[in-house]
Length: 173
Image 1 (cartoon, rainbow, N blue to C red):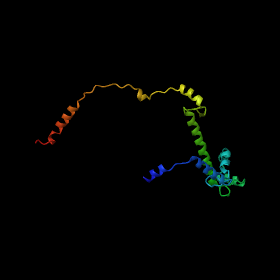
Image 2: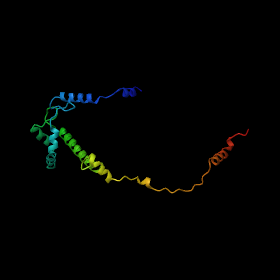
Image 3: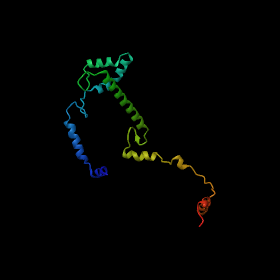
Image 4: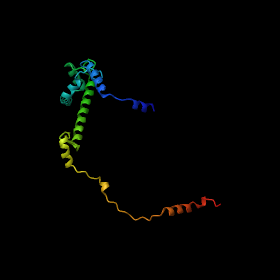
C-alpha cells in the first residue's frame, strides 16, 4: 500500500533531472569514467589491435607475453599498474562480445520491416512503404470451419437426465 502511495505522490521533473545529470558530468575530473574508474584507454587499444593480438596468439605467443609487451610500451590498467594478462584477456573477451552483439544487432535490424536502408522510416517514405506492404490475416484465422450437425439436447432434457441419475439421493417425503 505504501509503495502505491509513493508511486502516486512522486512526480518526476525531467528538466531538473537533465540539469542534475549534466552538473554531475561536468564535476567529473578528466580521465575518470562514469563509475569513478580511471580511463586508461587500454580497451580502445584492444579494440584497435585485436587482429594483431590474434596473429601473435596464432604464432604461439601467450597472453602473458602479449601483456608484458604492452606493459613495456606503457599500457596500464585502472590502478596505474602495467596491464596484466588477466586484465588483457578480460578486455579481449569484452571486445569480442561487443563485436558479436553489434553483428547480431545489424542482422536483426536488416530483417525489420519498419526500417529502410538502415534508418527508421521517414515521414514521407512511411506512406510509400505502407502502400507496398499488404496486411493479411493469420492463416489460422482464414481457415473455413465446417459446421457439423450435433445431436443437441434441450436444457430441460439435460436437467431431467441428471435428475434421473441422482434420483436415489433425493428422499421421498
